Image (cartoon, rainbow, N blue to C red):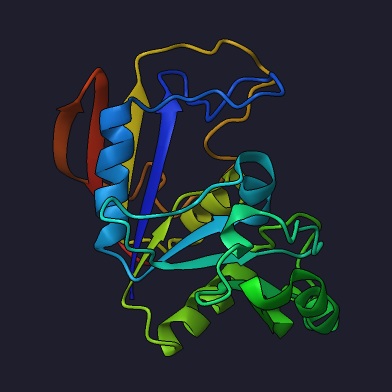
Length: 221
């Protein structure tokens, strides 16, 4: 399974600022490019915190809806979130085994919940740890997902990049500086698979509106 990481950040590496309302970093043209890329993938994965904070639709440019996927340790997901609005195409939700039955009942027909033992002992936080995320990716591969797009949030991105589980990185840089130490950074602390001794391979750079979009090829761990 090919795993593509896509994110937008400020020049100083922030995903957002520290205010309660979401800061939109991407230009409309970049949003369109991301939706086109979604249309080339079989599934889109975001962490539960992204669903809580942004309430995304996770739709493609042509209206096609790739399979939506999330993972949560806490189970704190709102059944009224947009990703759970389509019972004909339920969102796949991964969680610890002990909470799967209760979460399935609470989320209803808009979610298909699967408990994974690898998430049972994951540390606090909805993304879990790298082994838990690896188990989710393995299960998606077994379920026939050939291309997966991962769009965040910070915990998921950090676990994925630390473990070397991605094949491509699409990094869109907005021409702004946040300058607030409270603002969420794109990635947490390392060590990362692509550290100074294992550089990414530059595959291309393009201008999208006023943003610089950098494409990297990554090596798997």
